[in-house]
Length: 114
Length: 116
Image (cartoon, rainbow over all chains, first blue to last red; front, side, top):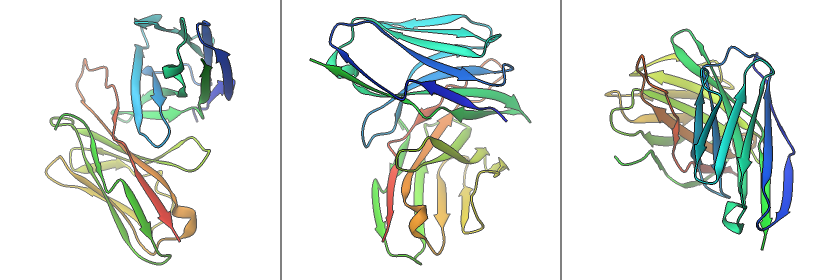
């Protein structure tokens, strides 16, 4: 059974800092890995998706990396802004029985202080 | 539609009543997922649909929970005889399914269910 862990559970940083969120998973035979953002009372917004054959993906100030062999992914946020405050979730997919089974981490709650 | 739509956004019900939660996926998305997120908890998988069939129902917590999908589009999650522990946010996601698809998940805003 795939287990996904995110560390830290919460993080508070001053505006402008660069930061790294961590995600680890137990089964390295993944199909893809997605990073999501969740604002309070809202659904999840997809930030980046990394295919199993890829090492990283970038979108604006966000960069996600994937190391399947060690079962790790990181989300790097450059020059953080108060608007980045949210919970960040890592989701790992395994492909089994003809479809992707997605397991979520419990998230990292980020607060960026102005 | 432009995105995944869920209704109602909030539902308050009395213990023992039945509730229906609706999900309207992105047009053309054949895969549909239901998840549950309890306060302070991670997302818990409930059920997966491919078209109108549900090859994986392994996450449904009890026989009080059921779901269907019609026309390969709208899905309804039904909870019978609701209990207080059913209180949670119910999230729906859809994705395309194709050989070369990256199968990115797109989520709705969820239904906040409160059982009194």
